[in-house]
Image (tube, rainbow, N blue to C red; front, side, top):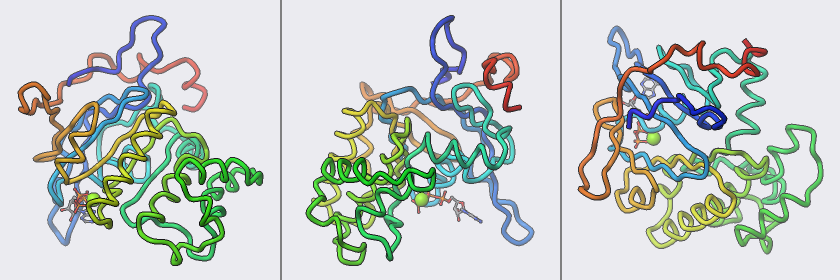
Length: 263
Ligand SMILES: Nc1ncnc2c1ncn2[C@@H]1O[C@H](COP(=O)(O)OP(=O)(O)OP(=O)(O)O)[C@@H](O)[C@H]1O
Ligand SMILES: [Mg+2]
């Protein structure tokens, strides 16, 4: 891709970008490299799929992009602001508002009803109005189960509730990690179509990690994680093209004036 985070004058900086990300895990005395130089730019309203075999580092990459883990080197830029410079509190607030996460195993809280699960992200910011949660349950076709606890719901129903929860704070970015991994094929396709409908109708950026090529093909931009690097699939030739290249300007020179207040 080698689309840098440089912007034309007046153009909004990209919603999210990664620059020369490296991440290794230490097991015993060995260091296992997982990501070995990721450069990627995510734009508003676009669905990106990240395909890769098990162990290729999809979850690791999503965790770095969401600020859940730190890279060894490299930066994550949210509208040209380096998130590693956010305080712990600001990082948590940023993640809670800017990013909606959908996981393979749903991660709904068992003691809460479907509606309470959807409203939880807003309650963490002190908002107690249940109405937006109800509207989101409507959007995912789950109002008839609003009082059910997660263990009283099917896998597909739990994932619908989890998608509604991910949208509760109206985030700009949705990240979904194998969201159909625990579902049968038909239910999985329904859930993906719902996720894509909501992403498009609400103008969200979606980053969707999957090992399933059929799901990956649904992305506006299809990326493949292989050998620790991202490649872009060229839909016209089905070949993949490396996404790499040094950033053209130093990070400091590209920071928005506003972002400097958080440095
Ligand atoms: N906390 C950790 N400590 C050590 N190694 C880890 C850790 N987390 C991930 N790894 C290793 O990093 C590699 C990438 O893991 P990751 O979970 O990102 O892969 P993935 O592409 O999401 O795989 P899957 O499709 O099975 O979910 C794997 O080899 C894994 O064993
Ligand atoms: Mg994974």
